Amino acid sequence: MTTTDNWNVNYYKAQKCLVLHGTAGGGTIEWFLNPASKVSSHYVVGQDGRVTQMVHESDTAWHAGVVSPTSIFANKGNPNQFSIGIEFSRNKTNDNIMPDVQISSGLDLVENIRTRYPNIAIYFHDEISIGRTCPGPNFPKEIFRS
Image (cartoon, rainbow, N blue to C red; front, side):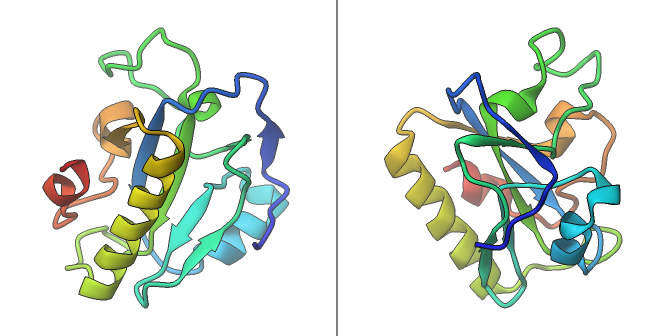
C-alpha cells in the first residue's frame, strides 16, 4: 500500500457505497501523496490495470466531499464518511476509451470489495457533484453497475 496523509480516521465505520472517479490526467498517486493537494481516494486503478491502495477502507479518504444541492446525497452528510473511493486513471478530459485491462482490474476490485460489503451501492462522482465530468464520457458505467 502507498500511503497518503490526506485522510481521517472514520468514526462512522459503515461503508455504504463506492464512488467511482476519473483522474482527469496522470500523476494521481504523486498528487495524492502531496499534503497540499488535500485529496485522496482509497484506490487508484492505472491504465495498465495496476491497483494502488492509498487509504485503508476503514478510514475516510477525501474524494467526494462537495455535494451539489440537487444530488441524491444532498443533506445526507459528507459522503467521504460512508464511501470507498476508486479513481480510474484517465486523460485530462476524462473521455478516453479505457483499456480492457483497466476495466477488468477495476471490476475485480469492485467485486472484491463487494465480498466484504455485500450491500454496497455504486455511484459515480458526477451523481454527487452534479455537473462534474467525472468519471467522464466513455466510462463504462453500465458494466460497473451490473
